[in-house]
Length: 467
Image (cartoon, rainbow, N blue to C red):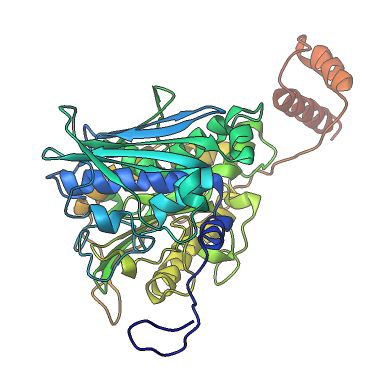
């Protein structure tokens, strides 16, 4: 092939359209692709809102609504729309270097492929309609366009609208696996709702509303047990470990502690399910990118103990905030952490330090009896991370991090004296337990723990009588 301008023989390295589209979508899960579309809605709200990201509810009034069926998927928002000035770059497969649209805006988008990758993942026919307060346009990506190898351009039609500025994406001609997932008995929407509750809990807490099939999705914000921080700072008590710093324009916050009162019995029905709630959650610009992690990624088993059921009441949240999203320790899918990012490696040391404060403390707590532990946690209450930030202003005993501007609050946890009591754990057949309960207490349905205690007390009295 000869270059028409230079007359030089050349070969083309341009990708085929089919290869590009298929490779673009191959390594992303369907749920993550749709979450990318939700992220775009939030980015639009950020461009539109006048409130700062650290305000109480900067996303108040903004929403995204998703609808799923075996024939169609749609997502609609009122987040400001795509302006005419950035329309061309919004549809490029990759962000042009001259595009400064989100410069100094705390988003998570960096590469400019999220919207295109998502619609290609879902189906073969997509209609995008978007309008601002000034103008509106629509773009139709069809199966025919996919098949036209040498055509990368798509016609744009202008329209006017009096509706609140926003964007609507409708995908039909769904991929076979997608149609089955949206309409199948496994109910994709149920698992997706759970993901949104988890990964968008910070955004929902700050006013953004996500609706699925016309129903708002509730958030699941993290709460930590704490006594009054002002009194704990002056003496001792149960409170979270807190670390704050700014590293290369990235604001960092680490909070870790007990999210529930400690119980040493991993088989206790009331607490056995809490293992799913333990671990580290990592937030980048209000988006949760790691949820309840209990692996070496977040320091477990590397400087801190491996996760164990003894630690199932310990949880923490790390928050990274920056107006330069390329510096965030986030992967290209925006649903994971780049473990080699230097900022994350630095912060991970503090995550391990905070973990050790509470994993070590559980070794003392498990030597207390239940009554003493209950008494210890009675002075605490569950406080959401957002409220803890404002309470942290009461702390006067911050320590400086050596070699940086960071500061650390490590709570003075109570000094515990080992209880003289000992816990006895054993099991017996249900019918035998009922017989003993009837014999000792006259009531066969007495709880097993009370029956066991009564049996011990009965034998203790018999042993005293034989002395």
